[in-house]
Image 1 (tube, one colour):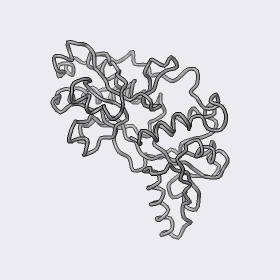
Image 2: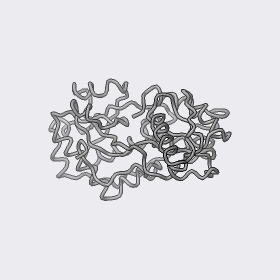
Image 3: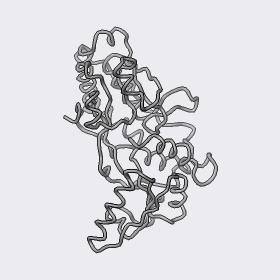
Image 4: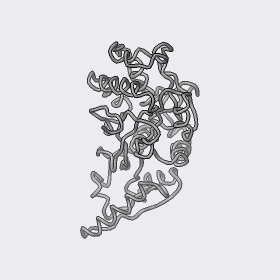
Length: 300
């Protein structure tokens, strides 16, 4: 996941780029996945810890401010997003209802360890460091994505097409580091360097792209997709259809003491992949580029 301040800047400022908020905020009818066909799997439900099964709810810890993964509907109360749809489907497969708690990203792992929540789901990367404390059921692959002007007038179809062009990145981000590395590769190949416009303003970056001062913006996959769909009612930007660059998994966090819960969630996720529900969700939210085909625990 991107640093929290960076995400907040993008969502609060970046979506307001170039004009009034009406140019860039979500449409009046946000997407929603039809999950009515998801039915309980008794064999998977039997793996649940007794206290969760008897409660009938799966307590989900999240940091609900990261479209399209998780954010509030226009009522300011109802969680929605690709992750919200997916955890609802997983819960339904296990005969449960998902119940979200909104909390600081930094408190998610602690809340899991203390039993305040059963799982976490907040665009949290499954990393070796975090695996020392909790387990992860991996459900999505994110990474760096290239966002260009609508219609892609400069023909950026691959990372090699960035050679000789200017791109905008956020200061101190993984995108900035990748841009520097790609520039070095371009020079070594005898092509023009990648000129980086490094800022701490997503609004500024989007203005640069809209006015043609840069050929592309590098950003996180789900967020770039959301901005492309909502900015100017989807008329300003588009995402280059490539697999995530330097991709890594997002994981549903589960306490290590709840190994059976991890297995139940893994099984439910795989069932949703197999029956097409997972594809329906990632298609609804236009994030198929990061879709997985096999559920895994800690990448295995």
